[in-house]
Image (cartoon, rainbow over all chains, first blue to last red; front, side):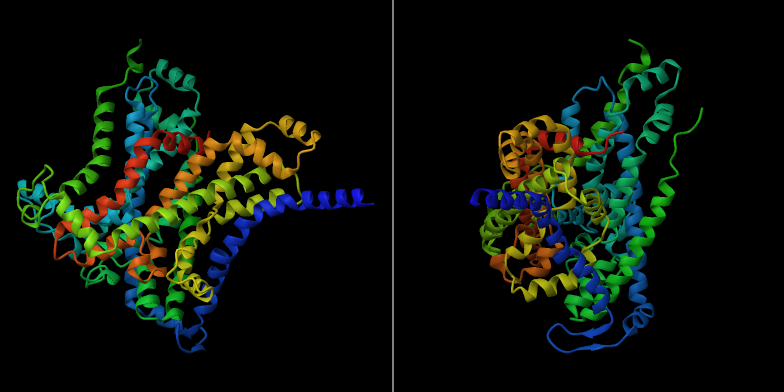
Length: 305
Length: 275
C-alpha cells in the first residue's frame, strides 16, 4: 500500500514540522547561551589555563575574588555607571514620549526619526566621539566649561568623572529607542482620556503624572529589566574610553566594570577559572538587581482620584 | 480649539534640543574627521568641517585593511539580518499558527531566555568556538546570531494578528503542506515586518563589539568596529584617524537609515508593547 504509506509518512512529517521550525533557535540558544552559562559555574571551580592544565580548586577562586579589592571596585563602578545611565535615560524617554504623543504635533516623523540616529551609531564610534568631546585638553566640553571659568576637568582621572562620561554615552545611545517604545504604548491609550482630563482642567503635568506614567507600566518594567541585563554587562565603553590602558579603563581602574575585569583576567591574564568566577558574581548581581527592580517597578500603579 | 489642545512652544523647544543632542555627535565626528591634528587641537575648536577628509580617509585605508573590514561587516550583518528574517518568521509562524503539544510552554521558554544574561559567559563561549575550530572566522560571529528570542516574539505577534485561520484552513483543504502554507501564504503577508526585523538584526550585528573583539585575531578578519579599535591604538599619531574610521564605519548605516529609517521607526513602534 504505497499510497497509505506515503500518507503516514507525510503526516509524520507534518507532525514534526512545528518542532523543526522552532528547533534552530533552541539549538543556538543551548549551544551558545545556556551551556556556556552553566559551564561558567563549572570552570569557576578550577584553576583553568586555556592552553595548559586545569586543576579543581573548589571555591578558592571565590575566596580570592572576595578578598580582591579590584573586584569590589569593579562591582561599584558597574552599579554606579548603570544607575547614572539608566535613571536619566528612562526619565528623559518618559518626558519625550509624552511630548511626542501630542495629536497636533508638527514634524512628528522628523522628531521620531532623529530619536533613532544614536541607536544606529555603534558603541565604538559613540565612544570615540564622546571621548574626544570630554577630552581634558582639546575637548569641546572643557572648552565650553572654560568659557564659564570652570575646569578643565580631567574626566578620566576621577571615579565620578569617568562614570558620568560613560553614562552620558549610554544614555545618548538608548534614550531615543526607549522613547519610541514608550510612545508606542502611549498611542494605545485612548485620546478621549486625555481630552476628558483636559476638559476637567488637568494641565500637562497632571496628564503626564496621572495618565501617561501609569499606562506605561508594562513597558517601563520591560525597559528597566532589559537595561539592567544589558547595562550591568557594559564593556565596550569602558574599554575604548582610555586608549593608554584599555583593559583597566585608565591606570587607576576608575571605570573598570565587571565585564571588563572578567575580560582582563580571562583573556588578558589567561585565567579562565578566575574570569569565570567573576562571571558567576556578575550573574548573581544581575539576578539580584533585576529582581529588586521588578518588585519595585510593579508598584507603579494608577493613582486613585 | 481649546487652549489646552494646542502644542505649547516649549514642546518644540524640548524636542528641538533632543533632536540636536541626537544629531550633533555625528556631526562632530565628521568635523574632527575632516581636520588635521593642528586644527583639532586648537582652541576655540573649529565648528565647521575642514578640507582634510580625503587625506584622513586615505590614512584609514592604509593603516588597517579597512575595505576588508567593511566587507566582513557586510557579510556578518547581512547573514544575520537574513537569518533573523527567515528563522524567526518560521518559529513565529509555528508559535502563532500551528497547534502542537507543548506549544505554550515552549513559547514561555523563548520569552524567558530574553532575561538570561549570556554576555558574562564569554569564556565558555570562546571555548566552544575554539573546539569547533572557528576562532578567527566569520561564522563564529554569524552562527550564534542567526535567530533571537526577541525576533521570534516579534514575528509571532505579527503573524498572529495578520493572518486569519480561515486562509490557512482553505489552503489545507486545497492540499497544501505546512511548509507550503508558510512559504507561499504566511511569509509573503508578513514580509514587511520580517524586513524590519532583518534590519534590526543587521544594525545590531554591524555594531557588535565584545564578541568579535574576543573571537577575531588577524586584521584581515576584523569587522569595522574592531578596525576602529585598531585605529585608536594609533590615536596618538593622529587625533582625527580614529574619528575618521568611526565616521566611515557609521556611514553605511546612515545611508541605510536615510532610505529605511521611517520603516524602522514604524517597525519598532509596531513591535512594542501596547496598552
